[in-house]
Image 1: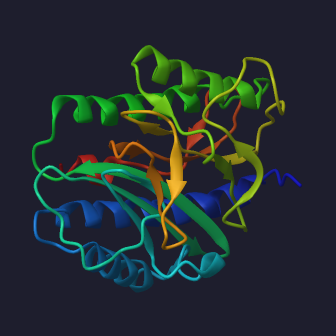
Image 2: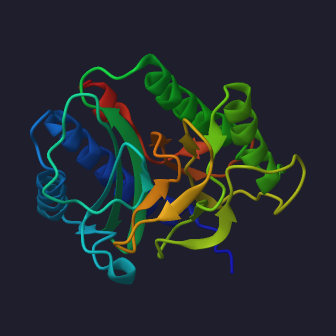
Length: 255
């Protein structure tokens, strides 16, 4: 079932996504060689709770942490651990917050120091594809238009789209209908209406698109061991131009 949001509900969602954005901004300052991913997780949890929110992922379907921290060949759902970041790592941080009964959700992929040019290009293309998908989230378009725009940008730049993992509706529940694939055909799927709120989140691999689930039951990993990137915004379908509720400004003002 799809829940279209009222303007009041969208304001609540904007507040929860602002807290997500600020949390990722705090985390971005800490992403340096030698810090453990579990320490990043604790910093995020403390910041969220200190600002009146609850970690949206902690305990969700049994997930044990506040952040999903996915390193290098991990695509998504990486569990924070004692692993210490090192120069050249690629780090996806996915954060969810519950505030005033509504969820925020956003993700950003960071680099630790210098990375290979093709890896830097992967991150650039994935982030660009996110915004190309967002551009299609307007009333009268179809769900397939979002996926088509994302997929086209990946294929034009010779990277692979992860197909098994998708975006989603969001509101009073972290995951709501509809699913938002990162591939598709123009004019296909659900016709978009104003008030639909979705998390758009392209996941691209440097190598092949094939993935598997790690033995920990959570982390999704590239089958060929090559790096992956993940960027996510929570977005409202509007007439003429989509409204982005989340933000990267607190990250990019720092880095």
